Length: 199
Image: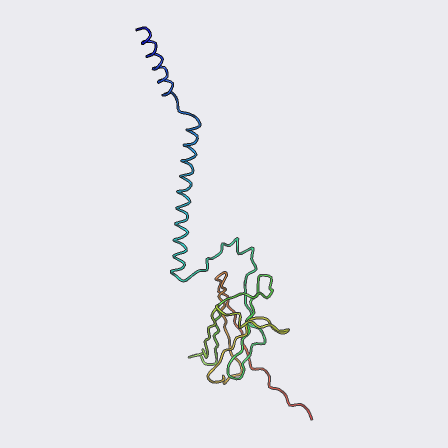
């Protein structure tokens, strides 16, 4: 009987040891597992958000994501445009040279959509005589460089030549990268007629 009691006490002791405090390694492993699951959940949510943003841009047809101000400050971007003095009234219409410049005043080749409007200010009731739009896509074909001028060379045809010696031109340039809309205005004239050579 005493032997059975001793065996029972030994078994009870082993049972108590087995039901003792949890193993520290197992506890730490469970904590790491839970932490990784939480991180994975956050990453999945972020990925779903990114996919939704991309889908929204694709649906709207707008794939150009605007850059933050700090990012833009590190890039060379167009901050103004000039209408070059070579712009003039030509036979059949207008020839307009548009020069994009950065913040230092240097010429910079940048893609963008250009709108040109021409006005005869002597007709107050209906001054606009022309409106032309040049898409950003394929704008490189209009880029022109010479020792006199660098920029976009734009042909703006008119159904009838203007009956005046000067035309006011307003140009809007929408930069593809920054989405800035820059404008310039200038009065242009016809180039002087070639003088006959003296005999």
